[in-house]
Length: 591
Ligand SMILES: Nc1ncnc2c1ncn2[C@@H]1O[C@H](COP(=O)(O)OP(=O)(O)OP(=O)(O)O)[C@@H](O)[C@H]1O
Image 1: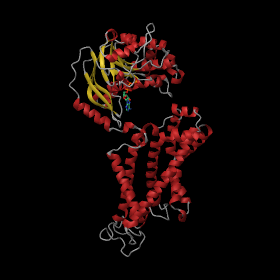
Image 2 (image 1 turned 60 degrees about the vertical axis):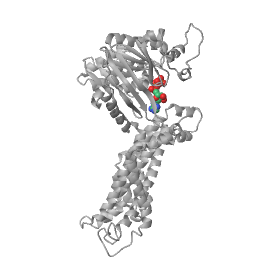
Image 3 (image 1 turned 120 degrees about the vertical axis):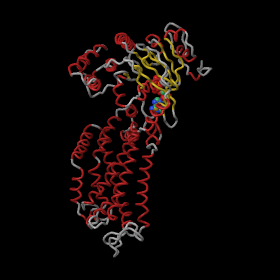
Image 4 (image 1 turned 135 degrees about the vertical axis):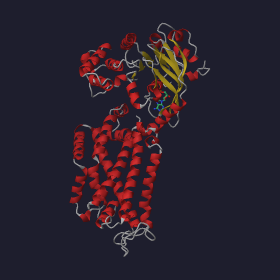
């Protein structure tokens, strides 16, 4: 029963250090310090003097108000007031959204319906007018920071509850939550131990956002005269400046400082929020990927001399996962895929097969980074495509139409809420905008027929298909645009041997008919010996041997290949040991 905190330690839920986070924290920290310490050092902000509207200078660095109050002292007290309201609202709104979003959706049934209805109703009521109406009902002398915080929290939790609900619905179906349920854990323990730790980054982001929104909304309310009456905030400062005609009288020092503090605080909180968002969605972390691409562009080796029959040339490819302890998952891999051949990629689990396939397709995501090497696609029309340096729009057009992929666990890759037809159709709409609806429908039916699935299944949803059918649909999707290369990552591993055999035979038949090349990734070496033309054996990120299937079978050169071959028991032969880890080989697996 894992959870984020247990899997990666608390560091997993902390934002990564970046200039953005540094600037955000510095801004928020400095303003918070000013709000905390300022009122202690700058004296009473309400002291009235007979030096009204004095410009900044000397005794009053930010000048005075109409009634001679020191603007700097007022600014410090108001910053404290605004921060206090923001934090109160943040805590209340996050607690409410947690209750309505997490608890409701975990319990399900009528509770979920009711909580969901409540959040939907709150969402459709426009926020600010509702705040104005509620605040207007509270008598002015009772509008303290708690009252305003409650009003703002009541109107500010619903959007966040929707996000949390969606995430909880997804989490409650994960295997580790099901395992906790089966193990007899109480619902509140499952929410606290299994679900909440995985929601921490989202909760943190929603909290920061609620604080930011509360400070802005409170300023808006106060500016309209509906703010706190018993304490001062940045909004009330602006309200009094407006009432004292500060703008008309040229007293900029009265309204610019509170406006600037609100803007800087908003900016700081937003930057912190963006950094937290990157934990939730690692794709937002653009730096490693861009750095990786830039480095690839600079250090790409000169295009390898390629054979005229080559369709893909990979040269010196290196992929590193930039985690706390970097993992060098692919090391200096060079290989050539020939037109129309089946190239098998074999090796034990974790040797880097999937990472290599993703990098070739440029599907790798941070923390994966291509640190060196090149991938060149040799198109039928004679042009060479430098895949790692393709601009995004060209890359989008290139993928799937020239090089498609059947993902590991492909049977679970179908979208559960749309039909097979709409998923196949989407691919055609994107890549072949000139096709009419009828042509698209015919093409979808044609590829389904090709993979042995009744075209009437176009109307089906994923859950209405068997595992083998889903796998075939994914293969049909990969065939849809007649690519020249198909990368298949363990395409049949989850299927029984009879279905597996049927699907592989068909892939070979299509290959003969359509002439595309296949990179077939599997740890099932006997299978590759049967279906592949050539086999590359990977170990610890390196291709240790690449040869024809026949030679790999008859005369393997590398000790690791021999170990791999020996680890598959023969039905007719003697009993032998299973795979011995390469590291346990006497020579460490070297030749
Ligand atoms: N997101 C990640 N962060 C850090 N390391 C990773 C990540 N994904 C994979 N790795 C590491 O990269 C190495 C190669 O993993 P990869 O998934 O490519 O192996 P594989 O050969 O495809 O394994 P399998 O056959 O089990 O799918 C492994 O050591 C793995 O732990």
